[in-house]
Amino acid sequence: MWAVKAALAACLVAGLLFPEIPGVAGKGWPERAVGYPLSALIVPIVWWMTRGRQVPDTTPRSTYPYLADALLVIPFVLDLAGNLVNLYDTFEQFDDILHFVNWTFLVAAMVLFLRPARLARWNLVLLGSGFGALAIIAWEGVEWIIQEMGTTGLQLTYDDTVGDLVLSSSGGVVGAALAAAALTRRGSHEQLSDRPSN
Image 1 (cartoon, one colour):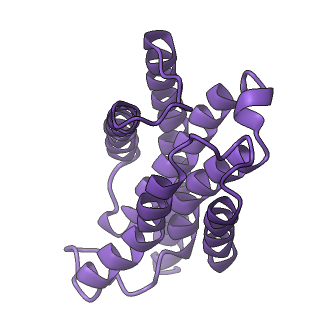
Image 2 (tube, helix red, strand yellow):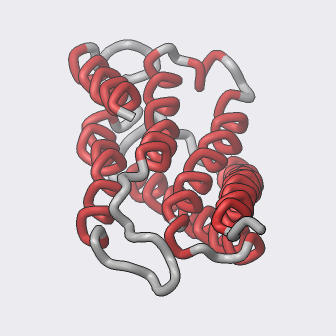
């Protein structure tokens, strides 16, 4: 988790120190430097606000969700790193691949954070998938606002936006399914281990 957050900080600082490199110029780096660090604060803040509370018939939310925290920050690191090495402009499919992969990580983090609730697998998949869909809608909305503010490097088009919505939502479904399967499998093992032996 700490390595991922350090990588986030390093990428942001590199872009601020070298604003003229091709992958950074015109890509709204100052806005990213303000918004992206929030990704590293979301899980700690939510955990701090909810720790010590118990959901009925579950374990206390006292164990910090390190994996969920790391998974939530990884998409922002990949986006920054892709810009720093100019993959968005030199590898045509990079943006499409990243939308799918990043939403897989993002939604998996959200589903893992729901572990104390001990929901059924289908609940976790639907909640995660819905969260992923809402997140990409918000993301595309923010990109549009940044472009309207005068940023020229985003080059948003209708086809690009619809493609991003589909790819990210699909990645979210995959992330939700994988994380839900891991949690429910772990939960079933825990239940078996809790049964009294004959």
